Length: 135
Image 1 (cartoon, rainbow, N blue to C red):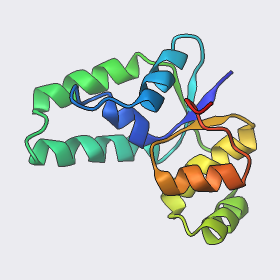
Image 2 (cartoon, rainbow, N blue to C red):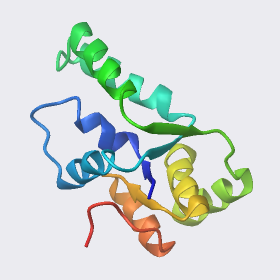
Image 3 (spheres, rainbow, N blue to C red):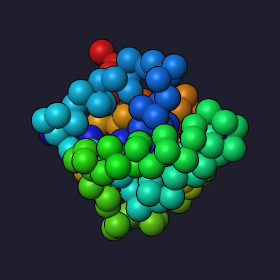
């Protein structure tokens, strides 16, 4: 079954020194399932990479390799968000609209959410959206 993949999870895969059980669980699921992402994910993942190049955690070559490897994974962009629901969820849970896009997508598709963001996890619990890697 597909799941929603937050950039906080995918970004950890770029850094060998970051080890998160939820991120590992999401990566393992991509062997048999596919990840759903909102349209902004493309920009967010690249922003994380460029910021970490500036911090000298990654080189341009690291970024290029990571993006090439990422393109091999089964990740599908969703381009039809429920705008009204995003606004409702953002207001209700005091989330950014960017973070809310992941919650709304998981809720609309009836699938689990892979995230490391504490506020997003709390909101998902309230909205009865399962979290990848939680028991």
